[in-house]
Length: 116
Image (tube, rainbow, N blue to C red):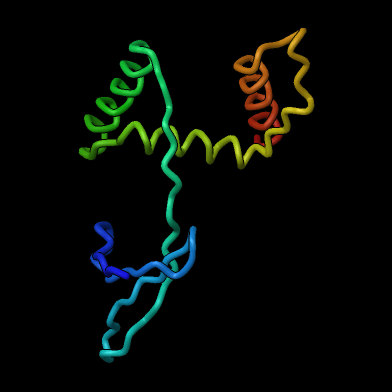
């Protein structure tokens, strides 16, 4: 079992079980402090050039505003997080009356109305 350094935090990490890792970090007293680091499952997404250009545009806007790059992966991850927070339920979708994109946009507007 190999050890590796987690790039974001510089902590020593080692696999514990699929989906979860523990990271060891020395605290001020020289004792090892453990914290959980979630592993991500690789997912392949096929996007057309227009979609890639849009994600690149978002990255450019974010970089201009904040000075940091925003990867395509991060943008897609945050979109999934938004859908999860909306508790999106596709059992309410009637594909004969509405496509998935319009259904999601309608649900997002409903959530926005209830949050205001």
